[in-house]
Image 1 (cartoon, rainbow, N blue to C red):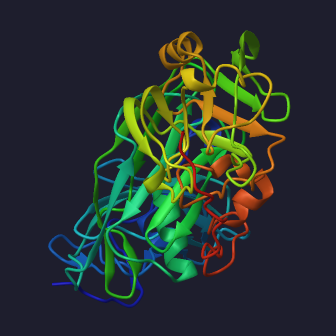
Image 2 (cartoon, rainbow, N blue to C red):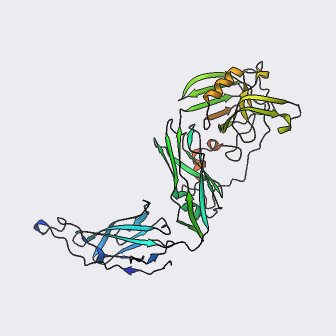
Image 3 (cartoon, helix red, strand yellow):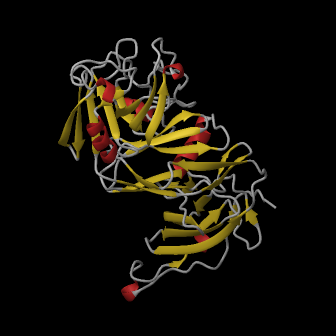
Length: 407
């Protein structure tokens, strides 16, 4: 049963002054500070605290609090704030339900002598079974430096305060370290990316601390399976549609220049940064799939997908005469068989394909693959509930026009 309690004074032993060599108050061991502090949470064995209420520690008249740490059995620390006068500490992050916490309080008396007290308490179960589970993506494995991390929520979260609770509990750590932030794509989906691309050969660990945490009215955090990603070399392929050339960089050094053809007028290839979605190999492309007036039905090899709607980088042996000179495709980037084989062998999921100087629109950040890098860092942070975003998160209803594309 969850018990709601008013402020209770904890009397767990008499406080005794610490005296050491020469009687100096700081020379002895810390005394038992039980008589100097009180809690709003029951510390009695068998009595469970309400996990929906913050933890508060208050100093009595003859002392002040100098430090408080609260941690549950799984190692999750509770964030908190201590008043300037040391009179009160309160938690600023929610407690977990059905958890056991250890609280360590440090104090000082009026003479400056240090006191200590360690206590434990249990929280009750949530009053509702409605929970929010999180599924992280992509699957664990090796990716390029442009790969965003995704979090799919099992139920929508609209309220700004609830979004803050969720976002604060979704942890992304990389080695080497990289500054990054979550961005709310919609009420059930978040993307995480660093300010710049991930470091090459990095390890990225993603986990959730939401389980048992109250998110909002009748909604509690559920389970999430952590994932670990690694990155390889930094591979960036930049296609200049006006110059009809792709330049491929590895760790910022040019490793190949490839003559290409991109979308003809009316089927212009999108500008912007695109993250490789998949290496699909042999793909059948037809005019019917994009509503093209001119008929074609082609089997295309060494196909690398960069948008959900069907933009690829692939072999186009039928247009080798135009590659390096003219744009004649229906939106894809075409190259010779030999160059396409090399590109297919070099590029990987999560690597970057960027198009510049095309007549097409810029790829939308969301809704057609990973266009996340087409938002600058300031705009990206506006989509975070913790880093300056609006209470209801960003407006994600607008989508760039999806021009038809294929071979």
